[in-house]
Image (cartoon, one colour):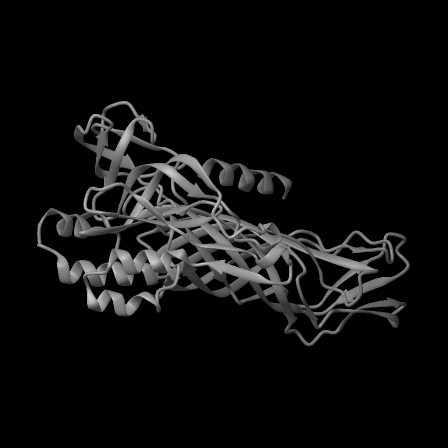
Length: 414
């Protein structure tokens, strides 16, 4: 069991080094020279400090930074431009609010992600804070100002500097429809995108800027849902009662399990992260099992034991190519429900039962699991999983810890 766990951990660590796909894109250096390249697309959640690219499949990898690259884009995905200017890093955490309304600007050199392109351009910077910026055609990029602070120095009064609304009134002064949206516009990506697209849609000349929006700005991504049938085999370690009658433990067993996994694939970081929930029915034993205590005085008997577990966890997937990926996941058992009729482990002397050690009918948040596997075509999967000790008794003392190693096959229904 220890070797199995070590193997899973080593596999998990190695998996994080799986290949990230290079995709077609371009760079523009600080001398305004444009070059077609292949860019390692990591599906950044936050704005990258740098990126890796190469000129073709066989060339060496190079690194782009704001000091060397003026602009880069991955076709049909995303576009970033270098910004050398002020950023207000004031925290959005109330525990870190300042007492001043004015933003505290810091001169920075960063990549901004382009959200909308056209006559009016919208950009975002996302790190430990989120800020938005705009530019008109090829003019200088400017910050849209928004800041929360303590009013009059009072920690009980929170105010907001919404100067960005006045900026929007000026930016869209020549468009009635955009003006009507200003007071409804929140300092969020979706709300700001709406007003910028409204303006550009009515003021576009149909030239390069519009085509750029279609080529580089990623479409709105939504979570994906997978539902899989997951049969398999559990290999149980010996089940020993501790802090009780001295015993060698009920023997190791192998038995079937069947689960239904619901997976919600999150719409960022190239769909690598997902939340999983897998109600599972399993059996430790389907018949009565009797063992002798170490001193050979007593018999300990447990009837068939089966249960339903409901683990919830997270999964990280690494794509090997268009059709296959490897994954690792960690989960915790939020609920365990005993389904067998046996309610106790019986202790007898000369066939007379004198003690009943109660089995838990339900358990919550007992036990965790670590798994690693392979998925083909988002249809077929195989997983090896180690499940840590779970006490199946009603009380913590005595306790009987059930742990297992599982081999699981999966078939994605949809």
